[in-house]
Image 1: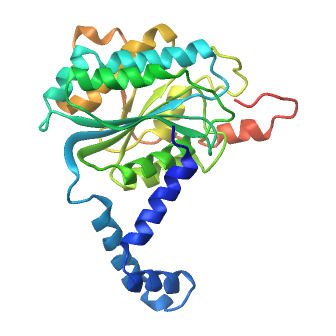
Image 2 (image 1 turned 90 degrees about the horizontal axis):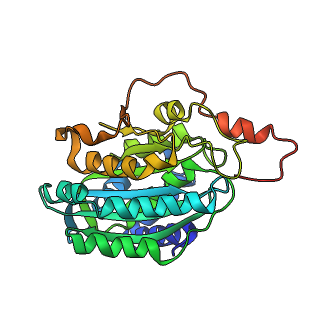
Image 3 (image 1 turned 90 degrees about the vertical axis):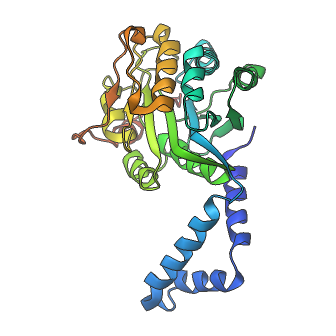
Length: 309
């Protein structure tokens, strides 16, 4: 499995080699403060160069580039970690999800699955893979079942979002839509502020959907917030048509994942009927007044804890 460090190094080295030497020198001059009055010109030129090289001409067209970002912080028990893996494997091979994929313009999606905890803990379990058939989906499911998940310290939603940007940069696919599907059982307590990171991701044309796990289980609930769904609504999800599905009991998890994938793949044209199981879909809305730094404050104010979810 690839770590965050190796992924970011690959992205940066690839970008540097793709630029002509003159552009590299211009960029260094700009960053050192020289020719500051030409900043707009150099900045625009570099942005054009980076955007032009972001998607190779040979990239394979898919309907959706989908990043599945799954929380494995210490607040989750081994049984809950297994429920997550099994839930994603079952959802990706579900007939309704496969039908949603087949109904797309290209009839295929590109998906990658990674697990995250603190701001330097991200492990890719499934690298970028095309799903265009039941056989493709079964291969992904087998990858999810090959090795058990490992948990790690802290909770950095912002770190997971930043890592997702790296994954999109490494993708050799050209999606009509780019989506980050992030699940977690607590607020951000490490790394950059999550709402600022969210806004930067959305500015790149990426949609963030959420799956707040309000199960109240695991090893520790000391860093939980009772209204995690509102936290996700105000601080995490974003982009056109973004939404979240709160999970209040682990028994709901498989259905929540399946429904979430169908909505992400089929888009706004999909109108779920009686198969919803009573799970609410909360669409993006005007931002409320939620304190998006609540997790950081809870962590900072600890004085007697020895565990680090």
